[in-house]
Length: 278
Image (cartoon, rainbow, N blue to C red; front, top):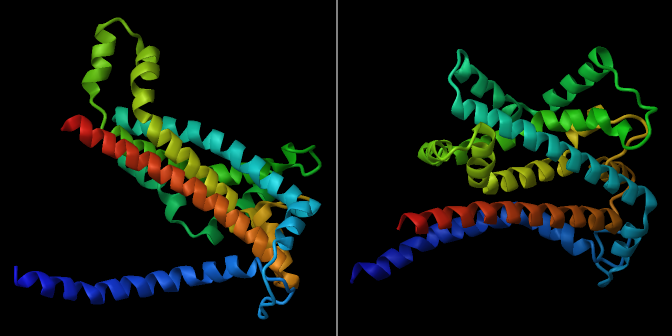
């Protein structure tokens, strides 16, 4: 009992340290959001609160067109990454074959490789190995960016799904086969429902990564193809206005929302497993 107050006081240095780290990490983002409501074109001078910059951002045809490109790329890349990542995870989980350990390590290479290296590699690939015609109609002219995004998105899906499969009881699949289900039906009715939370989390993670990507997109985008991050970067090069802040804030809010949904899906599934075991 006498040690409780001392324990409580000893936590204050750690709490102050955590508060300082959080302030260091999130203060720039807070300044970005705050100055997106600034009633002045100069970010260093606060003149009042306004929502006009959000209206101008949403009415900017070039910016909204770039946002539409980003959404299209993210949606297609997520769908392809979900299929490829799931198949890769199931193959690594179910089968044994020579070089499996090396393949698992190679699968994580796009996750740890610097984006600048990935961007240059994709630039060389599309410039010399597989030139993608830029005169194709929309959205086919986005094909090179979609391929590049799939290359670094599907390993994230594979890692999430692979971790989920580690908790699967193979006896359930064997029981389904004993009851007359073939391989496809056992996969569809037993394995896919078990993977569902990981599939949702992996899809949201891939969508967020694709939507936010700048470096790889900058190297693979054609002269007439602009995505939302690239458009914001081009706006910043001329001047840092509250309109840029508003556009960045909208992207930040969307990213946080998708990430929160993915984390909650994973957390809810973990809680459900604990309750089932107890």
